[in-house]
Length: 139
Length: 139
Length: 139
Image (tube, rainbow over all chains, first blue to last red; front, top):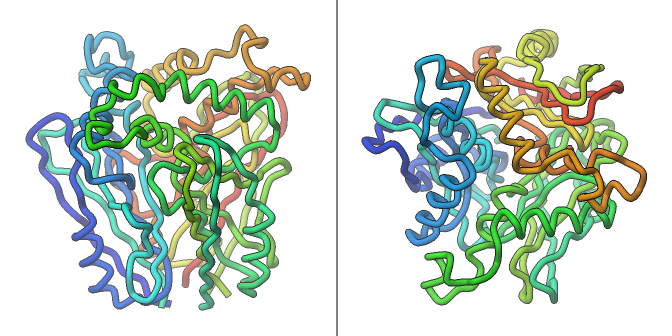
């Protein structure tokens, strides 16, 4: 069995953003040499997500509005978590809706995707360096 | 290491539905010959889900009502995504709540399930042919 | 390829609770002898979750309040599922928001975590014995 590990680093200047990381995951898969197996991609931080959906800017704005409606950032006093001095209580909730990780099949050396699947990093508490882990196992 | 790949095809005539696909995943597992490993089952389309829960029709109606409350289909003008000519903005949101994929342990040649676990395909934008991917790795 | 399976048992006296199970998963990983691979941790029951987030009590209370707002327990008549004689319709919905499972990379014999990642069992319908499955594959 082969295994391969790579960290992807991000510094999102805004509080929230969605970044298409499919090219970086593709590159990690090429580097791994794995032809058949699976590829785990997960946020290493608990106020960020990795998810698969469409690379369409209107949809991303819909996600932004919807998540802000489900778990508003302000007033920050609405979250007990923020009594610790943080202001990111909302980010911990938004991340649960969008998910921590995706697991993608690897077939014939490629990410085994449907027609529109793209992998995104979802940042909900930006302004600092954060990481995504890519772990590929197979042969 | 063994690996096995199979596509399951669906054509749901209604916009939304939940379909128990456990028998089809069981059959794929038998075909794979894998005895110990893991089984990834994911929607290949971004307006559909694969999830594990109970095969109880009242619960499925509860999911339908709840998801429609969290992310209503109409008016379709409420989603920027629909400006592209689509009317499925809501489906992209509902799918995030229910999830893209499940990963199931394979033990002694069987899906290693608790007492009530069943795998469902969740369709949120039906009326056309769509696919689920089953990828099994192990030995 | 090595594989290892372990069940973790819980009896939560209250209806809802979050329990940090990272030490138990760490122990299972040591027992497995797996150095490179992946670790699946999933609820075996459909009214419970396994998820990764912060071990901070204020945040857990925020999750409790937020989930109760998204899918209230009472009145139990609001869920068709409860017509079966159950009173846990809400628990099936809450579990979808928080998720069934996590997949964690195993690197150098350790759970490959970011700085704050901890694994939690989320109980939404306690008062009886329930299980989590840990399945580790790799070498």
